[in-house]
Length: 153
Image (cartoon, rainbow, N blue to C red; front, side):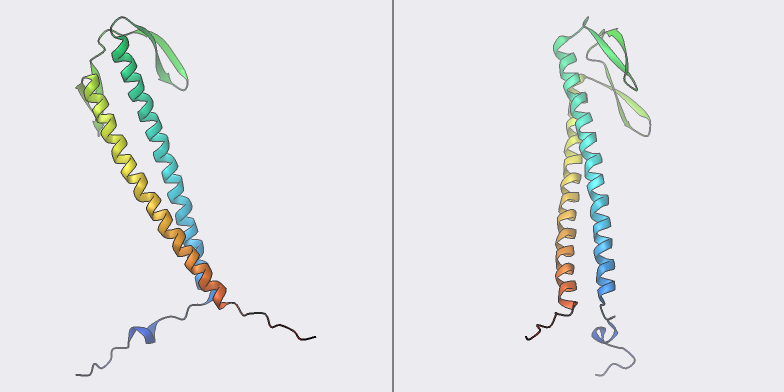
């Protein structure tokens, strides 16, 4: 049975030019740079979460009555005293706050860190995949360039 009016994929494939390959390389390099910035943001968030976790562990250890400095933001803190060390409030998203114990808060932090680590790993895999594609495209581009002729003397 013959198909009419359908052109084969090989016939409709656009010829790859050095310019097209260079555009693809630039596109992949841009994506790699963006993904690296996302990994950096994830790393910063994980570091913040680990600091909070360490602070909660310290508060749990020192307990009630311990004087500490409470950060207000922008590098400013105020002196305070721990009154109820096991009364923590967690932001569960959409501005909803839920009361929890220090242990529950630390479990929540650990889950968030694990989720971010999985996302970080996925981004690193994508960076590796894109880097391999760039390497392949560079080889393809090199093969397209005319070879210089050896001159005879």
